[in-house]
Length: 335
Image (cartoon, rainbow, N blue to C red; front, side, top):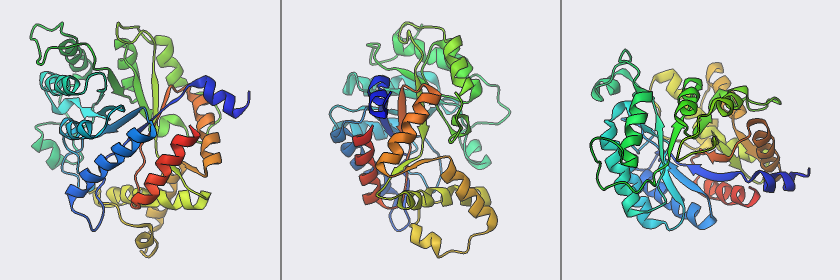
């Protein structure tokens, strides 16, 4: 089968995840404006979903409240689905999360998704501020099930506004999360090492999820969303260069314990990088999908074939917003 025929046959949906990354030289508030503007662009380009994220007290990320940000984005978009990638359920009472997303669904009917994660705060002081402990019992599966009952209107307490049954749940999945999603009959969002970027074999953990999936009323079939950094530029090297600001920020967070704002690739090139930082940058780039339009089209085909993905969620960040806008546009053209 030709590449173009495979992409049509596979019907891979294309979506964006924007973390509201702060940038050096801009106030935190600008990151939220940038996210809103990117969402408007994604809506105009015909992307399937636009998701935001939840991070608390992180200098490099301005979004701590997905529901509030989604309310603003909904007012500036028309067709694109909106959601969280994700709400960290251990930080919240399921009833409160249900109320927030039922309200969003009432405002923007048929457009709201709810992705759920289990990560705690980035540092110990943040975890204390959130009243969370690493030693707290794992109640994630039970909390997801409780939340689902509020959303579908079958709980003892009726969350308001009353449910219309229109908020799909997704699990941001580690290998343990895959088991939870399969047991509860929910779609999964997977990324990181599990995708084995550059590999040639099927991803067995995802095939296991499909084999053990228990159909639910809302989701009779398994659904896999693969999430990774994707960057498209006129040359392979230019695309790689655009990945460096995010890679450098992650390397710095490992060194200092603080995830910083994005800085330009030019500033990074002028810095003295340790061997460890350089290795971490190379590792990040190796886990991304990048290159020219033709190259990324081929990479996406290979990834879809190995993972059986139903959807690609591009979680791309870079300092240069014009280059990011260009990447979003070309990516939509080739997938």
